[in-house]
Length: 257
Image (tube, rainbow, N blue to C red; front, side, top):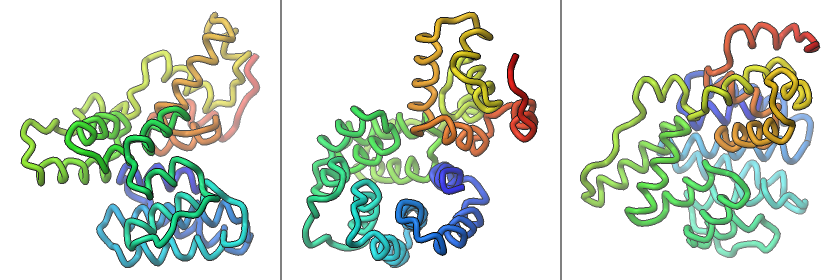
């Protein structure tokens, strides 16, 4: 649910508020630091897109209160990054993930490279969005390919504020229908992933080698900005690119023969 909510927030899709509220209500009683921190970070992120700086600080503080004293470098780093959007950070802790440490330190170039190395295009665009015109243009290209409307709008405003002309418009209808920029084969593979097919079954179905299928799956995860097949399925539904037949079968999954 948290992944689905994050995708909707980053795309500016309707229903994100309800999902975030439900996710937070379900997660808070569990005392699971990563889950609570992730939802809090997404709530802070959404507030930032809306220009509600006070709420950014408030949501980030909620998450940080829960992870304080625990080892959670990625979640803590993400929460501190959003907190830094609302107020100055006195010192950057050593126990947060390096890409976030670089972002908070305003080293956008090194941060963007770090995100690229680990295959996180959205976070890379977030780092590039802190740079000059050429970095902003690169961020916009990435964001438009991901269908990430709220951050893309912020980048466009920053370009206009610099007096930049010839700013690319948003995605056309074809791109919006396939916001992640997946190829036809990748869309076919994703539809089967939604149905629960394994890589071995995919290779047999598509008459491809397991190595080729691995390549397709890795490309899909990177373009969707996720880390696992489960998150890819959630993103497919959130983006509206999971075929209806696949969606129906995912609720009554059959084992492929």
